[in-house]
Length: 115
Figure 1 (spheres, rainbow, N blue to C red):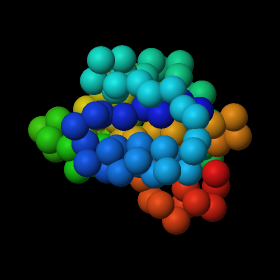
Figure 2 (cartoon, rainbow, N blue to C red):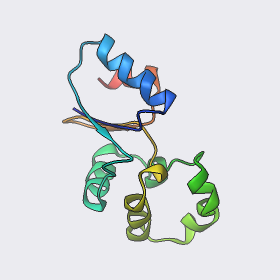
Figure 3 (cartoon, rainbow, N blue to C red):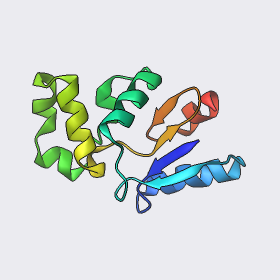
């Protein structure tokens, strides 16, 4: 499993602790240092069966500064991938990539059911 996170994020810290308590092995990647590429985002989006909007960190400062709430509906998927790949702080985190699925954000109940 690949655990993409921002180490200072408390939600990411809770998710990491949860994975460790469950004894799950994972590779950790700091989203600030190594942001997902456009290609990875496309692959994860397809694998997740989630709307692309779920990959955006809608509560982040950068999202608000760039007024993405208003801009996203007019953008193509390609443009949205470009924006997500431009800065890790725009990406919802944590992201957990497993062989079967991709989870965005940490909702313990959802992770419990899907892992």
